[in-house]
Image 1 (cartoon, rainbow, N blue to C red):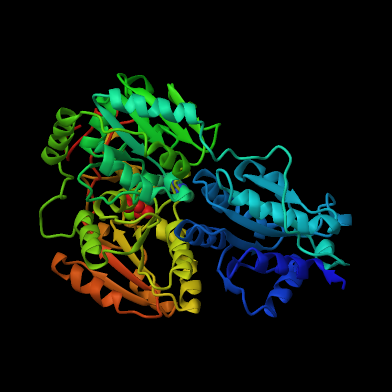
Image 2 (image 1 turned 135 degrees about the vertical axis):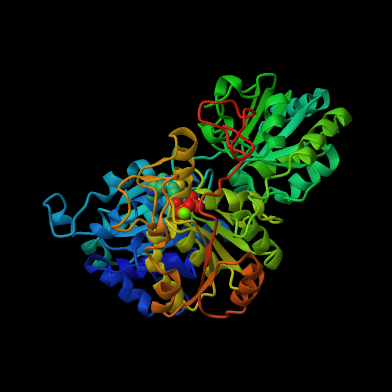
Length: 580
Ligand SMILES: Cc1ncc(C[n+]2csc(CCOP(=O)(O)OP(=O)(O)O)c2C)c(N)n1
Ligand SMILES: [Mg+2]
C-alpha cells in the first residue's frame, strides 16, 4: 500500500523506539505533525523555542542513553537549532533532528523560509542529509539513527523538502543498515591492552583520568571493579563526573581550570595517565608544556581523531571504553603504590574545597551542598558560569548520567531545557537545574513547556546579579572593571560598574524571578537567608506537577576556587579569595 513520506517517517520513529520527541511546527512540517497527531505511542512536546527543543532532546538523551529526537520547520526553525546542535556535537550526544525544507523545485530560489540547512549545520553535526528523492527516505532515516548513536555519538540532521514528505510510495522502513566507510571500531587491540596491563604494573605514580565517553559506553560498573582491583587514584573531567561516586576514597576530584588541588597536582606529578573516553582538552590540561611532564600517557577512546590530538600518547587504543576495560580487567594487576596513594590522600585531605565567605548572606557553595543533602539522588543540570562549576564541585554525585552540562561549547541557556528533557525521560527522578541569573534568561521561555507538560523540575537560581564568571575574571585580571557584566544596572547607575563604587542603585534586580515564574503558572520562591535554604528546597520538592523557580539571593561577589589562570600550569592554582 502506498504511504506518504510522513507516514514512513512516523513508522521509522516507532521502529527506532521513539516515545517522546521535542518540536516546534511551521508550514514545512505541517504534514509531519499531522501524521504525529494520530500516533498515540509518540508524545510530542511543544517547546517554546527551537533551541529549547534541541537542548531538551539532548537532556533526554544524556540522561537515558537513548537517541533524542526533534522536529522543527524550515528557515528560522532550522537556524534556531544551531546552538543546540553544536552543544550536542561537542559533547557527543546522540540526536536526530528532522527539519522542514521548501519543496524541491524552490530550493535555491530564496523561497519563503528557505535556509541552506545542510550547509549551515554541517560543521556542527556528526552528519547531515538533504532528502532529495522520496525513494531514499527510509534508508536515510535508518542511517540517521544508526550514525547518531554508534561510535562516537552525535547529532544528525535530516532535511525534508515538503514535497518529499507528501509524496506517497509503496515502501517499508528498512531493517538493516550498511554504510560504506563508516565502521566504528569497538573492540580494542589486544596487544595494546596487554601493554596497558604491563605499564600499570610498573607504574609508581599512576592515575586514571575518566571522561564523558565512559557514560556513553556504560563503563561505570566495570570501572568501579577496576578501581577495587587496582586501587589507582582517579581524576575526572567535567564530563566524567558521576562515573564513580564523588565520595569514592580513590576519587581526587575534577581536574583542570576549576579542578581540585589534589586532582591538579596528581595530573602534574603522576608517571602514568590512563585517560579513558576523554579529549585532554585545554580546560583540563592548562599550559600543555607543563602538563603531566613526567608521565606516559595511555589514551583510550572510540574516536581515533581524538587520540593524541592534544597530548603525546604512548599507548593509544581505539575502541569502546567498556569493552576495553572488560578485556583489561582480568589481566591487570594492582601496582605497588602505597606511597603514591598516601601522597594523593594527603593532597586531598589537606585541601578541601573552600566553603565560601562567612557572613550574614547566602553563599553558592552552601546552596549546592544543601541541594545535595535534600536531593541526594537527583539528576542535576547546570547553566554555564560559576553556577556550572559550583554544581560540578559541591554536589555529591553517585551515579552515571546524573550530571548534565554543556562541557565543550559552554552554552548558557542549556540547563533548563535539558532539565525538561531529562525529566521527560526520568519521571521517577528529581531533576534540578543549578542556574545563574544570566543564563536562565537565555531559555526562560521554556517555563511554558514545563508548565504545559506538568513537570516538577526545580530551577535553583544562584542570583548574584552578575554574569558572575566573567565578572570574576574582570575582578582578577582587569582590576575590577566590571564591563557589561552587571545585570542590576538601572538608569541612575554610574556608567562603568566598579566594585568600589557601589550605591543604592545596586539593589535593583532587573527581573523578579518569582513573579516571572508565577506569570507562567509555575511556582516561584525567594530565599535570602541561609537558614531558609533547606526548608525552601523541601517545599519545592513537594511539587508534583509544576516547575519551581527558587531565586536564591546570594553574596554578589562570591568566586569559584580553585582557579587556574589562563596560560598557567594546572598546579599553579589560585586557591582562595585575594590570592592573585
Ligand atoms: C551563549 C553564551 N554567551 C556567552 C557566554 C560567556 N559566558 C560564560 S559564563 C557567563 C556568565 C554567566 O552568568 P550567569 O548565568 O549569571 O552565571 P554566574 O556565573 O553568575 O553563576 C558568560 C556571559 C556563554 N558561555 N554562552
Ligand atoms: Mg549570575
